[in-house]
Image (tube, rainbow, N blue to C red; front, side, top):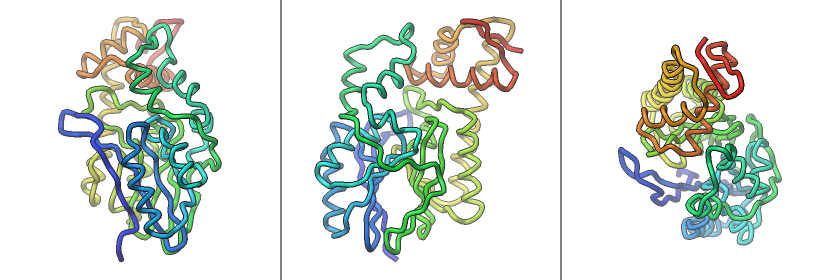
Amino acid sequence: MKSRIMVFERPLLEAADGPVMLRVFVVAGDDYAVMIDTAMIGFEEMAAEAIAAIKQQGRPLAMVINTHAHHDHIGLNDWVKTRVPALIASHAWGTRWIGDADQNYREFVLAYPDLIQDSEELQSTIRATMGPGTRLNVGFFGGERLDLGHARLEMVDLSGHLPGEVGVLVTDERTLIMGDAFTGLTMPFFHSHVRPDLYRQTLARVEGLVRSGRVELVLSSHLSPWHGPEAIYGAIASRRRELDGLDAAILEELDGESRTLADLWQRISQRWGKAVDFRGLNMIDSHLADLCRRGLAEQAGRWYWRV
């Protein structure tokens, strides 16, 4: 059977092991097509290629599925909708961020105004690429199914990188399409996750899909595909090591010393050779909250210490 999955990509940035890509996907059935992510402002040519492929198939675009509500996945939602009317869908958590780009920017980039100040660079690289907000028509939680006509899709909860993220399982092809559910490990900044607990559940969920024989190929928005159980298990194991390593590094920094979030953010970023930016700040804060919930650290005001 000819694959019903089409991939459109462009280079996004350089990482230690090569270029990081930005991709959008189209899944075409006999009756309908869906587009998975729309990329961001500046990548209109790539989105136009996806639209042209949909039109060439002669199937209506039923839905744009945003894997999650980050700027490089939703920025061209409005641009696409004006050219090919379709419902906008994503994890239900993303309703506010997809609907209001200014709120998205404030909460994503400027959540810690005493530590991260707005700048022309942030405005140009993040806010300017978001486009206008678009109404979320369909909110997924995972488990929902779509039949495109001899192409069956199942939504999979892949939260962790954000509190709400979905992947699309193309069941007949045993292929899982994800956004950033497997975060990049070699980027110059922390690709980040803001719910370590949900991230661990997502890794276990994907592992279960592979073990059950339902997934043999994983496609991602930025990283190279993982073919076969060995490659997918390896990707899962490396991300578990990152989670465990970040916990261990934070606890080592707190061993016999009380520290603030700002101090830990800078020390861990430098220790791991990453940019000291808003992504790492969000992630370190989330790990601190998770360690406190698990009784491994405690907080009083600005200060954290190891239990």
